[in-house]
Image 1 (cartoon, rainbow, N blue to C red):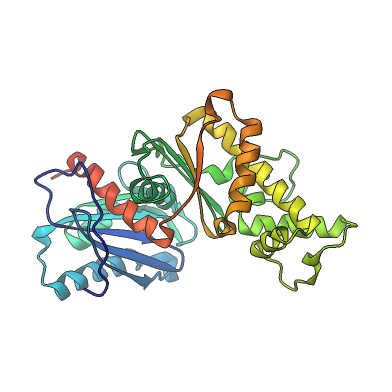
Image 2: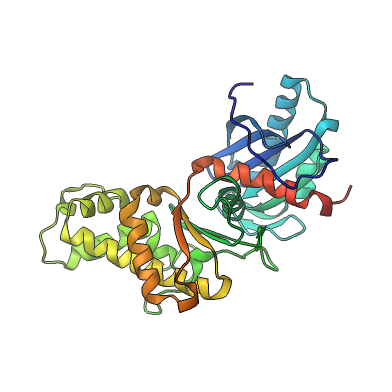
Length: 335
């Protein structure tokens, strides 16, 4: 094996579980693949390019080839493989059908059926943010909790909701699409989803930059943000840490919007912990402490004790959660 990892305890596995499983996280640039023992031990992890040409027609085929190549390399029979769990960037229905993955070029694709035909293995597909949340619940920032909300702040805003240890996918697979909660009725610019005023437009990395540019266009305060030829969300948080007044105002605005949205979500699902992940979360304490402060200001009294934590699995969360999702559902799947 190329990389050895410590054992991950996968409690609750069936005694009849086969020895191996795969977890796959399909991103817009790369597909992250993990090869596991069903005892929980991560044996290997690697990446392949996500080929989005021709509307992503070869993506699942490339994953199938990668799985076949790994098994051939290790001399392992498919009879010893439980299956493949896979996370994709779009809503996934309970039957494995994805209804549009814009970043991949997909329309309606039955991921489970197509990948199973290609590999001869059992497949369980879920939304990438949902399975990442499951991964964080299992081995990351929400370890030990069963009721979890996870928000990923990256180029966009993703979300995953776990109740009693299970993903809440909803009737059409859109459960957890936190980024598209409307937070501003007066917004006139369009979100990528086609609506206006979505949470993603203010709290994603690109949204923070958009807010910063608006602020810089009208502020009379001196600010070090003006020195940046290419402004980034990281720059906003870095300058806020140094005490820049405009950057501090921006951080407060972003965290107020997100804290209030999370307080509203908590009224519905009442999580034990809210996990903050994605590239923006690297800002650390200044982000999570300000989100928490605004959350407390807006939360229903019975929800104010909800803990906040930073995601800790990084890019591995999706593939770990995808493998776990397979394991959770294996007894429900057709033999």
